[in-house]
Image (cartoon, rainbow, N blue to C red; front, side, top):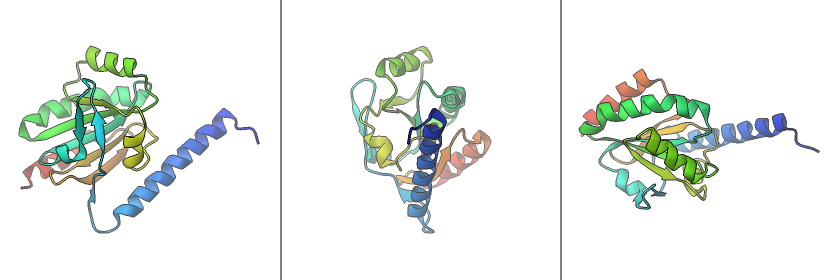
Length: 171
């Protein structure tokens, strides 16, 4: 059977939905799920791990320079970071493995992204975080390192801000 481009897209979307369903299923009724152990390689070559996220409320945003929605939401991601970062909030933008590193570096520099940007060059980070394939996919992680919310597509930023404020207020 020959795969047409539309069939390939449908299969990719279906795979993403199934992965999302599996992730939701894993979280169960017990509430927040612990963020997966990952090592993020930042643009400056340094590394950050999931353990480094603890103590702050962190937005982990999987994105790509070729993703129209990702590029459209980025100013809101930046303004959210700027609004809350002094209160213990952080953002980590994770570029997908298919995104050419030079494009990511150029984008981060020209847009003056104020937060850390990682390149998932092997795809291992996206795989660990529920086999992320659709961008943008964003996770909000609480101070204990637990995923409290996942967004596929652009979040409702007003609701996101309310949740961030609630999580920042927690001890």
